[in-house]
Image (cartoon, rainbow, N blue to C red; front, side):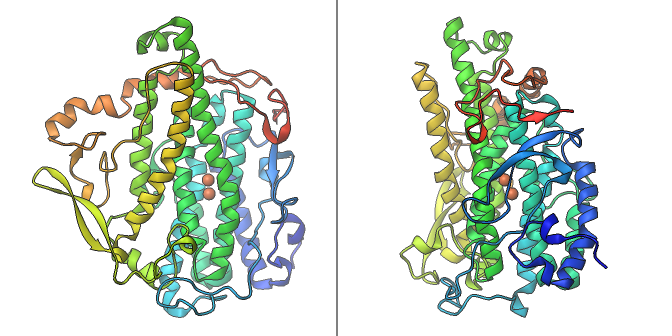
Length: 475
Ligand SMILES: [Fe+2]
Ligand SMILES: [Fe+2]
């Protein structure tokens, strides 16, 4: 019945060709996926040959094979990190028991929800980024955008594999729904708010890949601890790809800053209007974009107090970041954590049961991790001899979820009135004028080795190729 050799077409290490039910499910899903890609994937890119990395196995030689391919023909594979037959559950109420190779009936609904929520972010980001190719600042950057897009597509495959393999008909329905929701669409939006925001320009794209793909890293790290072994092994492999997405964001912003500082020194000015006239993005605008993306992204971790988070942990579905390295009892029933809330016009800490605060714990781990890159960006500014420093806003700034939503807080962490917020928010968040200015810089620059004026070239090319390599053949 099958005319497709799935071992060839879909590189995998899950014995796809030996599982008829799974194969049939994927055979039905795949054409719909390709339709989705053609409709919602990168604009006008169907005929480009792109220098992409494809994973054909999980070992060090196999997971990064480079070559020019047309994106609709990309071989979206299904990979799980190698299993450990002895692996034991290492947190929650089942600690010490063997990990699960199938899903215990009582946890089905919650696991399905976790997998669907993760899976939904993957196509969402492709949709958010679909117009960016038209305004790429270089071929190198265009190629990196497409690499991220195909890998987010692969991450969707990874989640759909779990849904098809372990959730029967429900899973197949969820697999279809993942192709039907649309980022930003009113009647059928993506599940999480940050994934319904637009990514209208490349400064947003680099901020998104730095901050929001890093949220992905933390969610995947927490799922990589799961007692449901196939989920743990799948997400571990996804993390190897996520590292590149964050690199694109960090190095992208670093190159924008580098170029701005160069022009600041050439023109001996720190006046944003003069810098804008010279066609580079002033550091104040970069700070406002940073404030926006940071605050929208930390909302993704959910409410600061959450009984769902407690349940997911206690039942062993989702661990903490680096669960295995922590020296506590991994049940957390007697522990507490300090979270922020507003009281009489001030932000004050209160102690709550640790289990209920696990979203906040993950958010705080994320914040620590994201600060590292900002320090590296500041090194670029410092090296240029410019007395300006970027910083992350206070975690209560511009929040839309949990106890901190509904109050107004400055980036420095001062609670302020609605009036003061209205008067000052344009200093802190990108204004329509900022966005229009950044948009005005976005023009397509795709001659090999050429870069748009507002961004410095990278230090190195992809896979040791030169910077002026032909990363995309437009045909
Ligand atoms: Fe992803
Ligand atoms: Fe990603």
